Amino acid sequence: MPKAETTFRPIGDSDQKMHGNTAVLISGFSTDEQTTLYEKFPAWGMEKVSLIVIAAETLPLTLAQATALPNQSNMGQTAELPRAVIMSGLQERQLNTFMRGYREIGLTRPLWASVTAHSEQWTVKYLLVELLKEREAMREAMAAEQARKNTPAS
Image 1 (cartoon, helix red, strand yellow):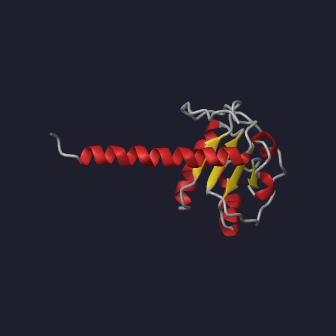
Image 2 (tube, one colour):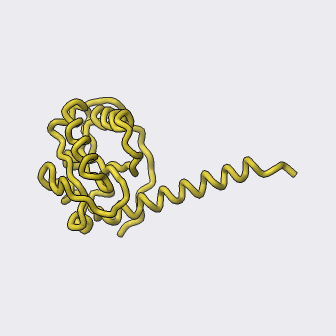
Image 3 (tube, one colour):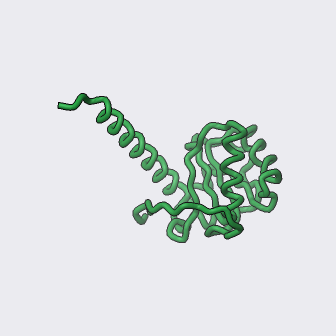
């Protein structure tokens, strides 16, 4: 697999569509949480966005293949996977509304990702592993920064 792309591009608030099939992939959510999210989609302007649950059989698919699955694929299934939300093909405005709405309903914070032209051929499993590595690197960097701040100057 290729090295993970780590460049960050700020998201605006336009109708501009982001890369990929229009879908949201989720993993690590209970069946009740899956239903809660899906029921919120119309209020968030996402009634035409597919919600797809990542299950064991989804892991070897590329992001392009997984986001092309039918709406509500694997709903009701749970797998021991990291809590993640992978967005694809949303308008910038939808992405912002979705992230804001997600915080407002108070669900546990997930790993967030968006499908890019660079990542769409990665497998779902590869992206989840990279997201976990990224989270751990950020934790280590934050711990090192905190330790540096707590160390008395010589």
